[in-house]
Length: 587
Image 1: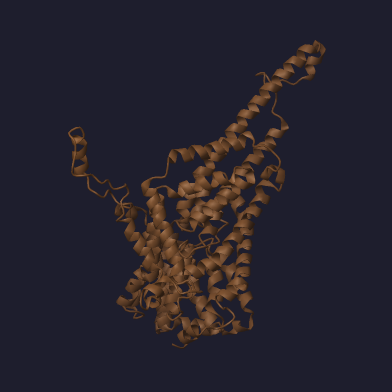
Image 2: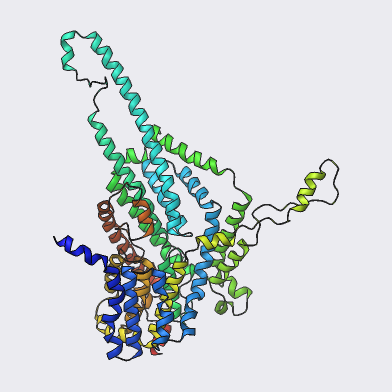
């Protein structure tokens, strides 16, 4: 009865949220006519729209361009500058390189090669899938990595299942032959004691139902490990996932004199060990949950390779063979990828002067991580996909026709990357979402809303910083299950920044763990695209993901708490309240 009454209301849910939210919140800017109240009015509306997704996330992100100037919060020029700032250019440059890696199937070649090296024992196979997925997610999008890896996992599992079925049928056939021989040797009086099905087959052995259950558990574990590894791997690099970029942009926005404390090298130094720790614990948890801790069976200690394992290896070799030898284009893309990573790491390492300082005057102030990202992206549109051919002027009569064809061809072939491909694969919605978040942070800081929020949170100064960071990380980890991880980071990081400034603790002490926690969407299929991709294959139920994901969230928060209170504390000097944060607060 209740569901019947609620059904008509659900039809108008989107309409009600879209129009009633601004109306119900209208007394805020009308009664309190300050810039802080007007800024808060727009931020709350955007937060509701982002959480409910009544309109696309990217469309909601464009609201500051219209309403901040109309309400007198910020000028149009100031707002629009936030949508393609330095951080967004870093994000776009990194994505263009990632698109080129996808375009030439370099990521698939890397994945198959690593899997063949690690082996196909059950535990090693899962570990191999997780290592490959995490590594690729560091550089290309989590969604693209998962979309590539899950079909490989599915093909391996199908082949293992088919091989096991064939082996079982052969064993049953052998068993039936032995049974017939025994029956012929026995007298007719013994026949009733043998149970034979009408089609002449021996009944299924009770072990077969257990084996089917085990196969289902293995399928669940193997597919879940991919989406979890994709989310974990994205946290290791600054461009790996959206929340990391949001933190970088918010730090530059809220603390312009922060001495580039968050760059590619410093982020990697902090987040990569945390990723390794999380990956190992996640692998151990999935092993316990779905495969058990039978080391002899999982690791194959002292055993020969089974038929299933040989079949899995054959699938990987067949997929590798389809790719053929590495092409000229793949080699060039690999060189560009390595060049970009080296430029990022050596621009400002911290312990020595980087190339930006040594080669260019005042390079440490003028050059950021976006410069090498866009430079390598430009090279991808210039370098040829095929090896240039040098033809001489003198030709013989026998190869005149071939020479004419060569002369007609341009010296440089089509480039490694075409703009139409980039336009099709670039996640423009995320670019707008980041820009909208930076516009909110800019307006919040300049309108005085951040300072007001920080003042309200002053009583939190009596709580130990590690406790604040842990509790906030848990809140973010739960909240991100229902909302986009980029939107979650965008909404909460400016608030946490204000809180840190008000209680005089290092802003990164709170912002770093909360940024990482925004990527811990492990519990629901709708929480993140990798989860949805894995769920669509039908091996897992929502309950399976929830039960496994709860423990994954706890593992993630504990790892981040450990990281921020050990090596993170010394790397970013988190025990001190930095002068650049104090100066910003005073402004």
